Amino acid sequence: MHRPPFELDTLSQLIAAHESVLRHRVLAEIPHLDRALPLYSVELGCQSPGCPTVLFVGGVHGVERIGSQVILALLTSLLHRLDWDRHLRQLLTGVRLAFVPVVNPVGILKGSRGNGNGVDLMRNAPIEASDRVTFMVGGQRVSPRLPWYRGHNGMELETAALVDYVKQLLAGSSSLMSLDAHSGFGLTDHIWFPFAGAHKPIPAVGHVYRLKRVFETSYPHHGHYGLAPQSRFYRTHGDIWDYLVTSHSGETPFVPFTLEMGSWAWIKKNPRQVFNFAGFFNPQKTHRHHRILRRHTVLMQFMMDLAYARALEGVPASELALATEEAIRLWYSGEPGPAAGT
Image (cartoon, rainbow, N blue to C red; front, side, top):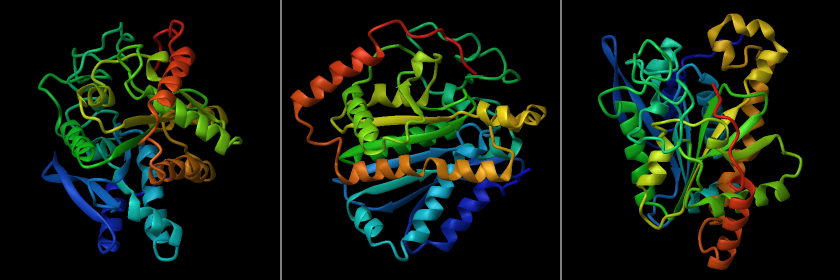
């Protein structure tokens, strides 16, 4: 069984070793026992307000450690490539890369989905679903002893810190794409976009459709992702990305994606994982763990290259309108599937 080091320690070591080329901040200090754990953001590249930004997020659910590890693997690779990769150095002159790899450090330490207060951070944003949510999975306020607990006292420190940081990036960028890495649903890898609480298109759905077509033509042999609104699978209250999309009133193009890695396939290949709670969400075999860490590199590099090309900016209105029509026809012309999920 692969037993990785605590992801926050890995991140701290990267920051200490590469302080000359990165910028880091402590977005919040999360109480845990007799100490506070830092919630770090890390940035590389352009600092101008006129730059496009790509944000990579992991560790929102503590038990889904593979999400943090995928983001940390990307950050580690980029930091080491800076020594020799001229193309990367050129890209960073025009793009800001932002990372929040360990959103929920206490949850990771505890091996729990929720944070130290038992709150599921992805059900904790101040937004209510407008469609019927999936029972329990959609978020509940009965008890922190039950999963998918939304909390009672507003946003948790972790949720508020991530929300504030994304708003700051939006205010200081010409466009923003994000990828939030999770695991635990399905046999295949999904890429979801808002809304989770309503089966209706987001304002940037035309951009999403355009990016889908570009990816499919540019990487025709990487079709292992299913791209769709999250509402087609299950619906929830309190989704952070729903809240950010709804509260964003500026003109900055904003496209948030969630990478939902299909962990059921790992269980299918190694059924003994079901006897370990973490096994429902993380690969347990070393070779499979390494495969997952490299599986999404093309997708993440694609997002960085898109930002450098300013693919969300200056799109003719007629082209975007046509893409929006195609998106609605593809994803919203019929009723969504049954509200079921994990």
